[in-house]
Length: 326
Image (cartoon, rainbow, N blue to C red; front, side, top):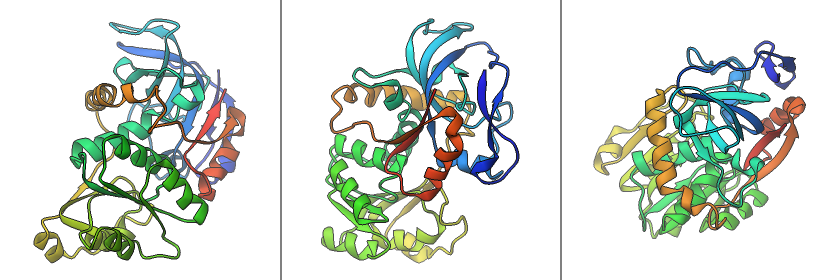
C-alpha cells in the first residue's frame, strides 16, 4: 500500500510517498481502507522529531481517519463494509490503517468521509478536557485560545451545543475572529492587537471565565490566571508557546484556581476507549443536524501532497481541519 513516511526529522520536505506493507492486526483490531485522514499539530511535531509515537505504534504519521472496514480480528462489533471514523496512535497517512475496535465510531449521518476525518482527534481531545476534566457545563463562561484551530473550532461548537453562557475565543486576524463568531463565539479577540485579559474582563463585567482551554502554554499561563474567574479551571492541551513558565501561586490559591494538563496519544487503549464511549453517548447524536456542530474543513490535499498539507498547517493560516484524501 502507499503511505507517507518521515524520511528524517526536518521540514515538510522530509515527507515522502512510499510503498509499505499493510498494517497487521492484533486481537480486537480492525483494518480500515482509508478514504480521508486528518492532519494535526502532533503530526508536525512528530515530523520534526519532537513527538515520537508510543511504543508499538506505527511510525507513519496520522492520528485520525475515516474509511471502510475491510478486516476485523477477535471479538468486534464491526464488520467489513462498515463506514467509520477512528482514532489511531499513528498510521493515518496511508491507504490502510489499523486500530483497536474500541476506538472506532460510525460516520454520522449527513457527514462525508472527508468531514468525518475531522472528528476523532478533535472531539476526543476537546470532550475529555473540556467536559470530563474541566467539568464545563451549561451556563458557564469559556475562553478558547486558538479559536480557529481544529481543537478551537471544535471547542466553540461543542460549548455552544452544551449551552455555554458565554464563549470568548482568541485568533490571529480579523478573518479568523469573524470565523470564531460564525462558529458560535460571543466575542473574538485578535491576540496580535488586543489584550485578551482586558477583553474578557470587559465582556464579563470583570468576573472572568470559568474555564480556559489553552493550546498555547507557557507564554499564556500568567495571563490565564488573570482571565479566570474564582474557582476557574485552566486546561492546557498543547505547548505551542513553550512548556516552562513562572506561576504566581498566591493568585492560584486566593481564587481557588485549578490548572489541568493532559495528553491523549500516550494513554492506554482502555483509557482512550472510555473517551470514545463518552463522546459517542453524549456528542454523536448532535452531529447529523450539522448545527450548532458542523464540519469545519479548511482544505484537502491528495495523500501524495502531504508536504503541502504540512506547509499549510505551519503557515497558521488555516481555519479548522486540514485533511488528506486518498
